[in-house]
Image (cartoon, rainbow, N blue to C red; front, top):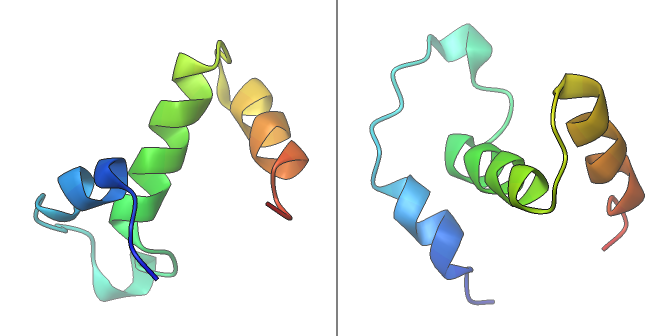
Length: 57
């Protein structure tokens, strides 16, 4: 399965988190947060609601 271009762009960034903080892929998280903000969501609660709405997709 091919990756989206936005995920590939964030994959080039170094992951400076500690090992304990790496539960989720950094590039995917950054891509999803960016898409949520571009969709008009501002704030953590709005971004969380947006992510929950598209969880199955």
